[in-house]
Image (tube, rainbow, N blue to C red):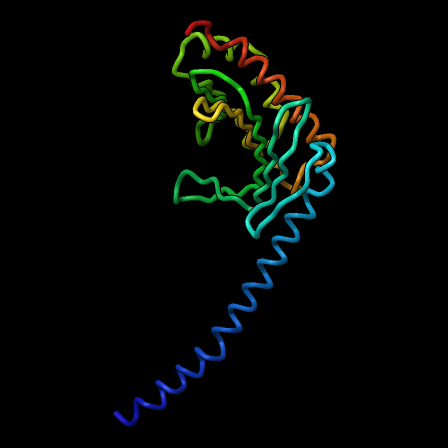
Length: 197
């Protein structure tokens, strides 16, 4: 028992010394990540007439574009893997366009592992057909890696997700193009939504 005491004392000393050091180091790394995320979106804030908020995981701007309420969120190094066998990490850009109406949700995204194909998912056949016939897939193909577009009827939100790697955030002209795509997608959505109560 007496021989075990020095190991316990040494362990306690290590905890007392290294735990605060780990906390301080973690705090420094989180502040750096928060600052990096904030700086990445600052050049984009004037486009939305908004200001940048950030934390150590992401940064976002709440504002408006073309008279519509918008949120742009950047999450660097986001894992989007659908399998534990391999990892896909992207610099995720999300654009949310608020205030849409519609009863049916839908999504346009690339699916598959080796041979990716575009798929339009919608519970309503009319919406699926109109979205498939629109130019949204051809416009999404020009965005880059891992783009998707979806409408959530519960919140009335249209969401665009895309990878902006190798950059941390899009250039201002690229963001304007993406925002214009969102406005266009909202117009296609309004046409695709079937009339009725």
